[in-house]
Image 1: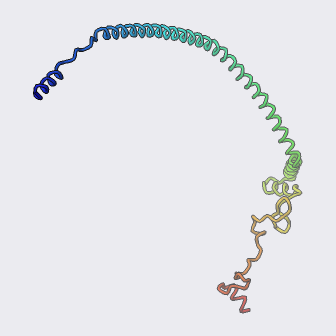
Image 2: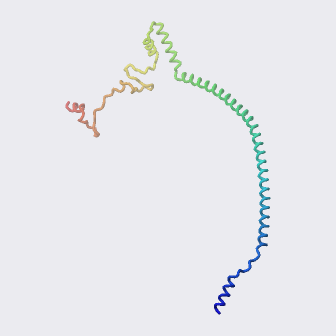
Length: 201
């Protein structure tokens, strides 16, 4: 009996259950898909139309901007040319004023240092030297040196600066005696000949 029950249970388990009818669901899905595709196509079409409208509007704006830019560039060129001309005029005026100012400064510098007077003295000295018969340049230079009141060489042979101090570029002004060689403590360094001679005397 167990066997019969087992066989009947197995046979019952093997019989397929009736499948539910899926056709109405498929039809509904197809209808929904068709509706969504139609909606998507409509949305795509309207989006494409909007994009085309926007592109056309942008092209029109670009053309307008280009046209105005072309008009402006011709106006800009005229304005730029006017600015350049104004700068050139201002530069000419500045150049004339600066050259006049430089000339005035140069004259003032010459006058303040007494260069004009010194030059006149040198010219007069040359004329006098030529009248006296001095034709060599050394005689002319001597006459010029005599005409200069502020000569740099004094009678003692020292070369002086403008302020009267000795000019150390010349040998005569550097002729101070050299100090003897000393150690750090100030005593003479006996390694040198000059210090050895001094110690013998």
